[in-house]
Amino acid sequence: MTERLPEGTKRSLLDLLVREEQTAENLAGRLDVSATAVRQHLATLAGLGLVERRKAETRGGRPAFLYRLSELGRRAYPKRHDLLAKQLIDTLIAREGVDWTLEVVREAARAVAGEAVERAVEARDPEARWRAAMEWLEEELSWEAQLEELPEERRVILHQCPFRAVSLEHPEVCGAFLATLLELLTGYGPFVHEPVGDGVRCCALVAQRPRVEPPAKGAAQLQDRARATGSSAP
Picture 1 (cartoon, rainbow, N blue to C red):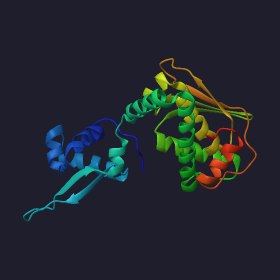
Picture 2 (picture 1 turned 60 degrees about the vertical axis):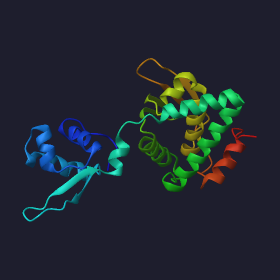
Picture 3 (picture 1 turned 180 degrees about the vertical axis):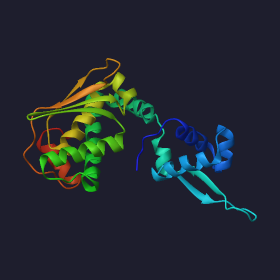
Picture 4 (picture 1 turned 120 degrees about the horizontal axis):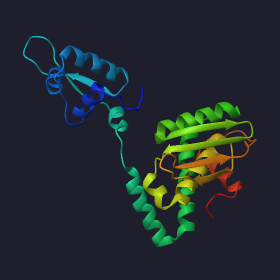
């Protein structure tokens, strides 16, 4: 299954289904294409997990189905959670200061890392762990990242920042969250956050060497390991 939206007629079908359930015939009329073609597109979208259907109440004749977006389909549409995140960060900084806000952000990153380890990122081989972490981050954060993997260095270049509104005004906050998260998930670190902001790339996160210890199991162990490296809140 995917959380990426397709293009063309399939995207047009999804856009129509955002608002309401519809039959293939109704969709065909809206798009001025054949109902057969629409059903083929809908079958593909259902196979991707983006669309689901249910039987409509009819009076005899051929059974009719109502199509709608699945939960996965709704999640795939672009969202601006970063606007809310920016307002929260602005409020925290105004009330408590930058240093305190950075510690809160790192604590949030440790909590997210704990959930990821318990769910998906438990590989003990360093390379397998790196790949599993990158796949998890791509799925959960929907970032567009270019990975440069050298023997003694890992570089993650973000083209689509999941916290764009925050990163534009508070790059140090975005960096604290992503660096902490990457260190705990990948076993590499410490990561250095390098803002770029050239209109194509948002930032880069660079780690010089892999850690030697195996991945921790769960949020509590991750927090203990973060405290040992000096990145935990007091």
